[in-house]
Image (cartoon, rainbow, N blue to C red; front, side, top):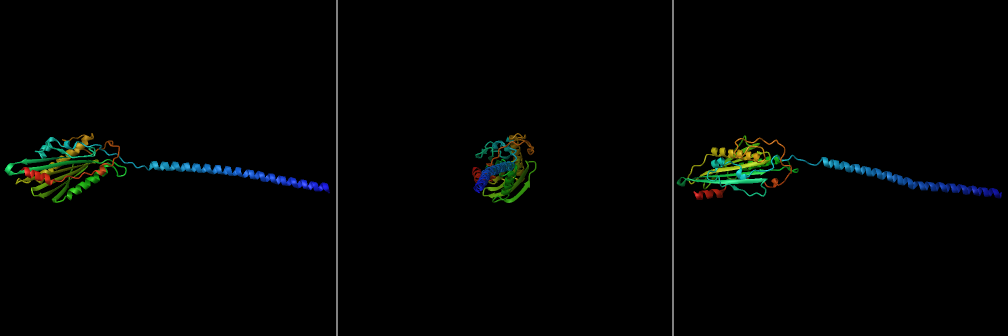
Length: 299
């Protein structure tokens, strides 16, 4: 009986030892499984994050805005856009007295004006005033291509000329053979010195807008000049100025050329967009009261 009891006790100890071994083995296995699962989870997360970053970078690169560079990258010297012959016809007494306007960026804007007083003594005087202004627009990724910006400004210049303060008998007409588009606006201005016949030609060639202002008056009893003749002269000046822009950028033509330049289809000459032109819209010059008063005093 004693030996049987001892055997039963031994069997019970063996069973408890086996159960303890199984518990320890299982407990040791759990951390290994957790570590393996954790590594597997981190690897998937890292890979997914990398794929997402790469996709975002690719989408950002493909969505970068671009704009075609402007055709013309510079302007001609404003006081040299018209030939001596044209100046002699339009401002005979002031063809050598061109006054260049101030500009903080001559590659973007420029202007030049001439005044002429042909004094005929007791018969009165003929007064003429001429101004040529040039404004160039660069392409800008946020605002659009240069030629589109120039077209918007061209339309604004035409509208401003049509709605000039004090204008009488205003008329406008398209001008052919001068740049990509051009418009003549003409009207009368009544002043104490006389009636001034104003002619404004606004022309666009690619990304440049040319504005020619030309007016004349008969002072101190002199006959008022013919508006048709003045219009013809203003159109001639605008055509030469447009040709000078093309010539300055290597497109042929010239300040004295009679043929209008074809719109440039050559490779872009200005690759760096600039927003400076959009901040510097030049105003079309109108007949100056002080200039006409000075003319009247000289007469």
